[in-house]
Image (tube, rainbow over the protein chains, first blue to last red):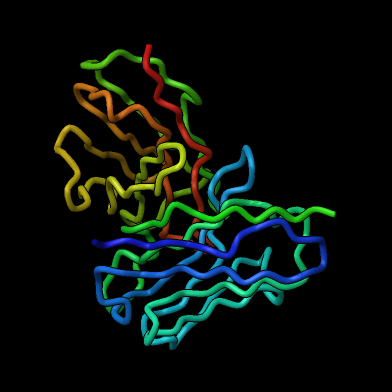
Length: 122
Length: 108
């Protein structure tokens, strides 16, 4: 079954860290660029980060640059998001999403997970 | 940054009716780099259309997209019960990619 399953969300204090995981199955993970997208409560969707299929390029939204790190482990078919120095405004449901292109980046998302909730609160 | 404004915020329709959703960009969207997604509570968002009008795999032909420049439309012909959801547009022609705030399609 082709799917993405996120995990690792929870409640964390401001300034602390959290690592999200996204397990991919049913497709050739190594052939696809992967993204993280988030949705704050009552807000729209916000792109967070992308890692190319071959890890040749990584990009971040300005709002998380320098604090978040996206990575992938092809041997485990897993995408990660290391989130440091968390702020209240990082509170959101975090989705991992597959890019719509094979061995390229088209910057739209053809497969999404159900998301994991991150709450940053003291 | 390109701001996408979707209208209406909520659309109340009955099954079998046609839904017309608008997505207006604050500046021209580069070429045809616009996508539409469907999102139901607690579920993964689903890609409907990319490249303005190309349907994603498995998307029925009652979903269609049109537009260019700054004005784009998602049309859902003959609404089915499973079509009631939130719909988002997304532009990916300019950095940073951005999403609209969504249109909720409710059962009337």
